[in-house]
Length: 277
Image 1 (cartoon, one colour):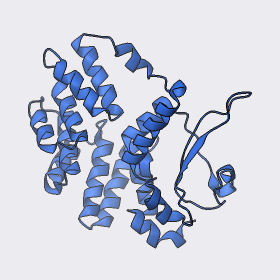
Image 2 (tube, helix red, strand yellow):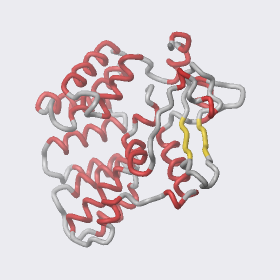
Image 3 (spheres, one colour):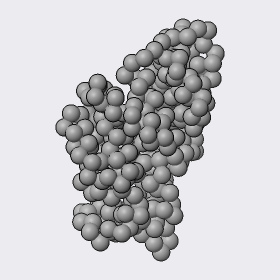
Image 4 (cartoon, one colour):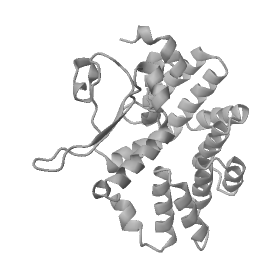
């Protein structure tokens, strides 16, 4: 995936909640302050403290550098394209500079709430940040089930890669589009392509304009790629983008960026590096 860590919803949530995102256009040399060679499209991820007049010295960490290497080799060596690694590094950065770690307002507001609806909402917000352990602790302590509790439990267990438990938790949730797409996520993440395909095809046949349909289109296209059918992958992504514009959906952005480059992995990027402009 060309989008690397920015293709992961958890990473995107953490960036939007706790950082000020800035994009460097390295084509025009604006990344020179970070020793980036102008004109290169190598993968970098920079975490930096704010530049404040008469304030402390700016401190920054650049991921994507590998001594003596650039491009795909540097990306692999530094793990800069791996969402799980970059999530850990962002949380470590916030821990190192605790004065910058301001709790997300809605999380802070719900922190001391005791009613089940608020506790469930708090668990869902934590899951957006990938905090499955904390979310499960909240859900386990809730006095009684709500209609969305089973889905939240399944989502948390899926984030922990506890596939069987996630599927079991979801089986007690009411039937509906959100339950179906979670079933597809579990099957997709655990590598059960046949079940994922079946569930996604049924979902898209019934709910092509649902709020989660952009993700369904993206996952269905990726299953085509896994099966070696690149043309069908591109076709289903185009359909998803047409229904769910890239300005409205992260998953349409993911599909679009992969579609226009057709670089499916770091290995493919390495093979086609000379074709990048």
